[in-house]
Image (cartoon, rainbow over all chains, first blue to last red; front, side):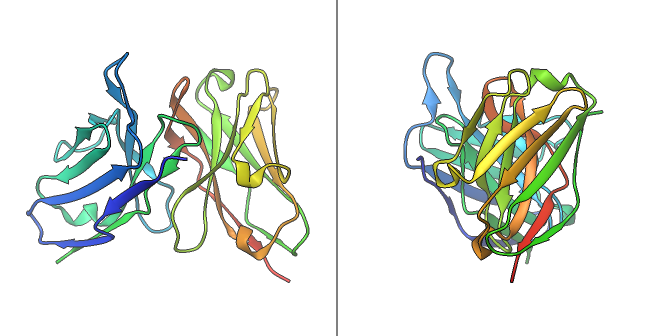
Length: 113
Length: 120
């Protein structure tokens, strides 16, 4: 199975500041035939299911604020929140869907400093 | 709008089985795979398996092989996940989720989750 490792495990950022979460896969998740990275990001708030935020490494799901962006390729990926808002406090997970089984990172808890 | 509505919380004894349902609406039921993911208390996300609602074919994570069965009822647009030989480590919230694009296993819609508690 592909192992997904996120860093850091937790992160405290001031309101309005940039937040960066990293995700590393144990194998390449880029498929050259369609030029796509098979990587998604989810946001999960307490008591709620995860919510899809980013897929294909950089495509925002409909309704996701444009302060959220995804980048990276191959084995190294980043979720960036350009200006942290109070409602962004949550746990964020990356997930690969290049090879079955789909696997998730351990999660990064984002808090307000 | 797309909705996945799951059955309510369950409490089971070790060795028992549990069957969780997931009723889909707002889209063509047979056009998208449904996947199951679980989350133990305070822990991360773990894929359990998937079902193709069109033909009923399934694929299960290796660690659940022999203990899990996924089925569907196309007349009610409902999928079911049954997990047997329950142990305390199976205590978790079980989510059903829809694949985001046919054939690609990211998840665009999720059920609200079903808490399964295994306790003697």
